[in-house]
Image (cartoon, rainbow, N blue to C red; front, side, top):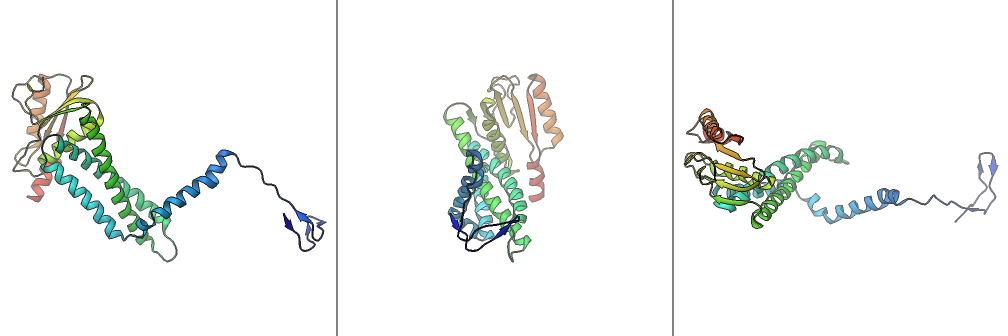
Length: 264
């Protein structure tokens, strides 16, 4: 109730001095209450809880993301067996998540520019935060999902990814591909650097880098091209192995050789 202190004229009528003004708003539905009150209040609380992150310099955010990616990448490059596959899964999802997070947060930084902060600074700060958060959350998701599948026996890992002295990233690429295959849930067994016969396929001692035995009968053969090989050679090898095992999928990974030639 609000007391009207003076006579006010509204729409041709005069209100009386000291008359009570009464306003009874319509009662909000649950849905409107949620969007107008509960939802904004929730995000304001979250914003306050993570205020320290917003205040953190963009350089530290980039460093956090780089350290996460470097740690996961080294694990994928050097660890054998299932450990290497888990790190490969985590590294692949961290990379893609960091890239997506960087792009989305950079765009959001345009609208977040306030007061005297330049748009460029806002974009940089947003992109750095998206990069770090994407790397961390992506790595956690990749590691958790692969660990669960391997630990429960949903996907069995046999062998270790090949170490190629001429191509530093060879084992990393094999473990990343195997990790993605584990996360897909489509394979009951994955063989690393093992003969086709060992995996129950035709081809004897022929040895692709990764063999995926499909849960529903769809198998996959993977070859990683090293610096001492050509993509045409590896494609011909895959075609030959596929000819012995009709219906298999084939995957050829060439970026390893390209990077190896550029860097080394």
